[in-house]
Length: 190
Image 1 (tube, rainbow, N blue to C red):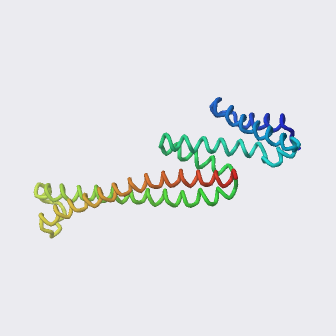
Image 2 (tube, helix red, strand yellow):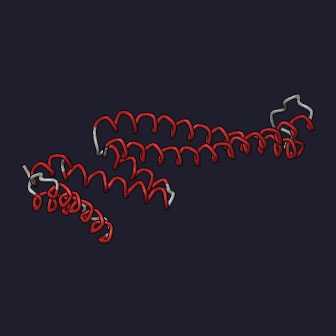
Image 3 (tube, rainbow, N blue to C red):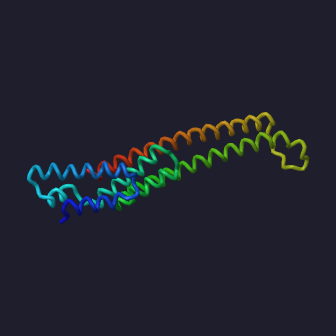
């Protein structure tokens, strides 16, 4: 069983890598827990047992810091770091966090691919119709030029709309992932 000094020392070593002022605030809070517990007649070992494993506590703080970084500086790299940090808290998170996240990322990738395909196909239909008369030996498809040009413009427009929608879905996924990770950390640390 850990006493106060061992608990604080283990917690301090687990918090390495966080900003020093953050470490000092966290350690101050836990020192305060010990002071309050001692004033109520509890032993240091009892207080340490009630607080939990300092390695798990420090892990949760590091994950929380990584999530805050992803929240304050949105990027795919920061989100990935936050998800990997959350998965380090347990096998449950590997199954619950990583599986659905990869599924949604795959769907978004598919939407971006469809968007790009529609745009490229529309541009090809548009310009292919315009330059077709200059290539007499090309394959001739019996479609009126105005229909083909309209179809090309429609495909480009649809591709752009899908791309814009995918962009907003990506932002929504990012915000949702951060909120879920925050919720997950809150559940684990309670």
